[in-house]
Length: 282
Image: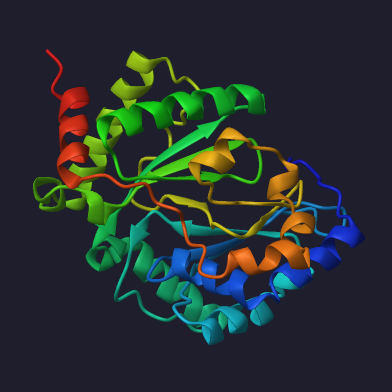
């Protein structure tokens, strides 16, 4: 049985305010554009059965708003996820339940035909947030020393997500077929995890339908923001800094304008060299 979370009406009101701020919505759109988006409803006393709404396409604010309204996103305890893969020609799905179900089944069977990109996601998750932080710090240092372009985002719960975008892969990786690329990234992460002792890295996430928390979305059960972090923000990380109260304050809100994912500088060549180093072990 799913864990029942407690809904706090004070924070629910803050959550509705958060998703009413245009700068937040535009930052969210940049993270989900051309990606399959999903709303996953947490279990509460009012809604004891978790529910997942997948196959949402929202490449513009109007479509995101329509989906918020259709699925009552702002009035139910939904977390927001988006695919690690990019689907430029992903079809729109009907509101009609029967039609939508058939369209979803068809997409599930043929989704790789729509896929054009697949990022490398490093999901560091631990019940002890201090341990997750320590391992994320170590991973960041490795990426920095290797010259890797990457982003780091607080997951809003028990860890951090580091991501290397597909567009920052070298050409030889981009030429791989989807299954070949995912297999390569999984083998890399298995060795990377073991060699560096980063045992909070989740190895069960490497499949073609994988999704991750949407940056700048509000995450249950703690009502924290899945917040992209600069190096300075990470080094001085606090949960208060990832709260809605902090960022809805008028003195801080303007800093959200086109804040983006805060990607570090690096090269595709460095990405390729690191992948080879961990997958071509003798």
